[in-house]
Image (cartoon, rainbow, N blue to C red; front, side, top):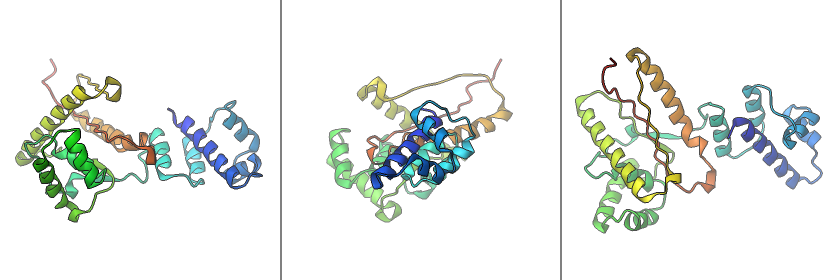
Length: 248
């Protein structure tokens, strides 16, 4: 879906909302409130005209509309802009979280913060088939983090440190990633996940630029699929950049 499609959807949604509040509300009044001509706006909403002005102008118009925060974040993300109100929680915010031998510690922590404790326990028992003892151990560990308060937002785990102690955590984290991926492949339908990989030659001095571009995508990704109260799935989106061997 392009940002132009999202833009038109936002305009249509807002116009419908204003008409519900005031049945006599006109397209002329709507256009005036946005700083647009009523003729071009009408054609745009009917699909007989395309938005051929700048992204900045479209964003300025959206900023004049009182829309749900998730819709604004998604619109910004489709434009290639890091959403202004993205909520990320870095692993530096919960240093007590262990990279334990259990592959489910990290994804379980994300699930724990995405549902009630009762829902979490039921999910871990019925879907992941953990024992009551293991579930209670996870809950106890997670309740020591952030004073027991749920952490809202999207979870960002930074495992880029080169310190030797951290390297062991990185290895454990990658093992966790791999085993969780296998579990998904075993239990989910192909249309529910995506796996892509590319191997290429490159220059060490340019790799930092690639890392920057990857981070931009990671920053935008949650907003691209954010559907507010209709969100029905927790996703893991992981990207690894690994130097395999010298290019010959």
